[in-house]
Amino acid sequence: MIIARALENLISNSLKYSKENSKVTVKLSEEKINGTIYGVFSIYNIPKGFLSEVEIDKLFKRLYKNDVARSKGGSGLGLAICQEIVKCHNEFINVHRINDGIEFLIGLVAIR
Image (cartoon, rainbow, N blue to C red; front, side, top):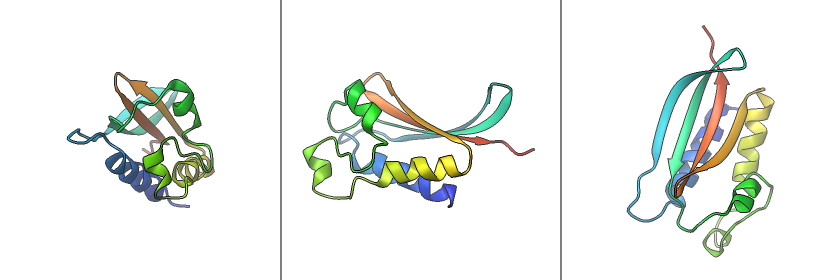
């Protein structure tokens, strides 16, 4: 399974489900976590609707669609597939709230 598919899915979802006239920010950084150096790919967007902490916790669940707009298209599998791809590579993916937006992070072990 290719990490590029997970990254593409996160970018695509962020663009599709962002609040109108808002920005999607993509960053790549290097972070040391528990003694391991990771390349961390982050995507930040402001969703169309408010997401509670409970909803954020469910985003990687298979078939989960948090709002009516999402139920009109897609299968609800995209983020679950992203998570599986990342796990197959023994890397990490998570999501958290920052102010009005959400940030997805994928950590990939840096090869030197």
